[in-house]
Image 1 (cartoon, rainbow, N blue to C red):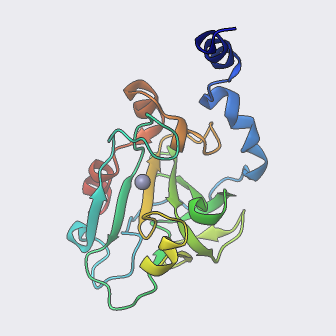
Image 2: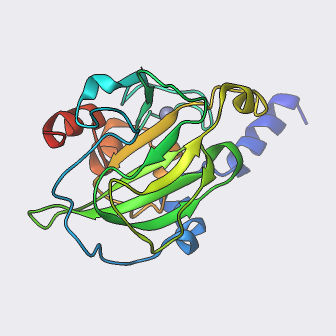
Image 3: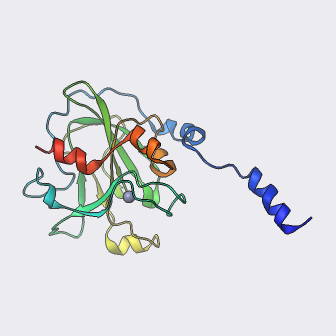
Amino acid sequence: MKTSLILFLAFLFVETPTIDKDKNRWKPYYTDLAPAKTADSWFLPFKSIDRKKIANIKIISIFGDHRDSYYKGHIHTAIDINPSISKTKLIEVYAMANGVVCSIHLGENQKTVVVKHRLKNGTIMFTSYKHLSEVYVSNGQTVNQDTKLARLFTKEESKKYGGDYHHLHLEIRKKFDDYGCASWLTMNKTQLDDRFYNPQAFLRTYLK
Ligand SMILES: [Zn+2]
């Protein structure tokens, strides 16, 4: 058989991952609990003098960017951020508002904490924090803006994974029906708008 034919047949049998095919793999990490308090007031996920001031974060990568990392061709579902100024080497990540931890999934350099929130108008939504080094909360835990969720990798620790992981990948989600895999399997604008808010637009509205 010609090599090209073998490659073509191999291609047919290699399953392309999709959100629908992959989501059940991540469901066991999800806890279905209602947030006890509404998320009335929102804050940046890092400690600073003013956690309401958007200038206190530095945006490294924007929402909707095309990516070839992790899963080739996916769309960036988050903003990648760091504090604008940091006095310490270890950067702590805080919950952005009242909520409940509903998923802790993945490991190593992709470790992720997801918090479920209920807005004043009753809307359920989620914040997702990825590339965490140490996690300090557990599934089902009630959190508020003073709850330290985790810390980020230092630049040195990030090198261990051969990449640039010393930042927070912050998603603001409309849904979590994919149990997390839409973070790397979102391939088009329709899927992006279905599950994710633009974090910059969200912050501009809700930090007030
Ligand atoms: Zn990212």
